[in-house]
Length: 76
Image (tube, rainbow, N blue to C red; front, side):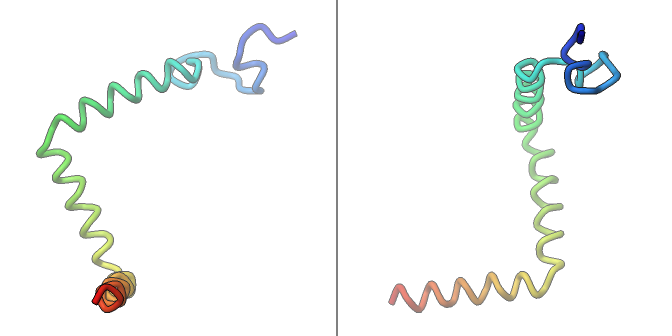
């Protein structure tokens, strides 16, 4: 008979973050997200990296521009 939640799910470790119940994990993740989002400089760096990654794909950027142009023509 299983004695803890990990054994019920077939995992072997009962330590650390992975061993916590889902509610505890979500609470810790929420707190971490709040702390990160308070640091505006850090958030700006993350946004810049994401923008650089997306804009490196010229085909994707072309498709975005075409959709914007189509939308604008329909609005007139």
